[in-house]
Image 1 (cartoon, rainbow, N blue to C red):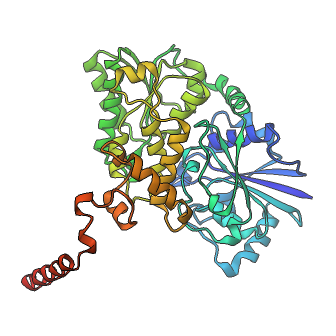
Image 2: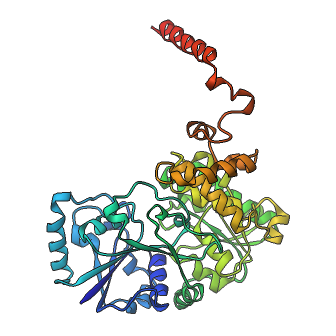
Image 3: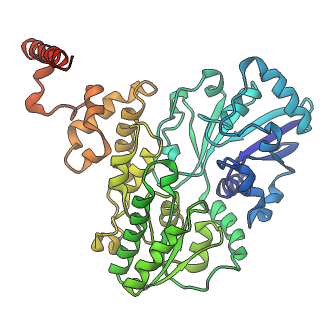
Length: 444
């Protein structure tokens, strides 16, 4: 007997799994379990994906739905790691709770680098693992070194074709290949969810603004994020859009919407703020937006690549500057959106939907940034990174890197050419050491 366990934390991810199952991306199994993980900061006050509108349309792909939170209570799915010595006990316990018996187990998980996916892979030792990605992070590097006992069991990275021609970098250090979830299957699954938007306003071709709640991730302050939303609104109004819909992040505070409402009144723009949690893709089908505006949301790429809708970005320059540390896993999504999509302030680029880079150029940039983010995991990418930096680094592309990072890795662009002699000059180094010594003495 074989049981497949599909771990999911979002409705979008569950839709991705449903499309993969409909397309035959998984081999037949005797039983399929959807393992629901609620990763909210306070899961007790936030609905899990199986309580969200539309879930019942996806439910029939699975034989059972079980809660990971309930199984490990009172621990939090994102913060709990089983001790190595306890792994056999946890496997025995979960096999009992989920009625697995002695079945062979196969896992399909989200982000293998972190819990709860990593914990599951460790508990079910020896189980083959499929990693599926529903966003742009799969195009970037693995965020941390993974135990080879886990990494070598991953057989593929299933992903949506959000950037046609771009291949994932995730887990390639283990030689894991990428595999596409067919786009028609995914859009068909999303079409099943569209009729559930009965509470949506009856608007046709508005400008749609996507909120992300970046302040919760400590990427922006709340004030900066409010300003970002206002910039989206102003930009859409400047392009002639008089009907605007704002889709806030479900966890975002209400005051984000209030500041937008005040600005919309000043601009004379009709603004509708959605108060019902719904996938952006449902809005694409129901409203057919004339323009989709966001920062670096994956929904920008689904709008463009899967639905052929006009898109525009705002605030990526600020995000590239503010993301810390440099290896922050959001850096690749921000880089892709910034390099690929037109800026909202560029009227002509938005009108023509002009792409900044083709897939080959973007792939080379992503590999260069990926090496700079994780040089110890991807040392084989150094020659490609050096070649790209030597030929493409300029005032515009420097935004994707930090000079200090390039210097630390001895990459082109790290030190201005006219100062390149300094690290090799013994006299200069001696003077610098003496100056530091004198400065410390003065402070004392």
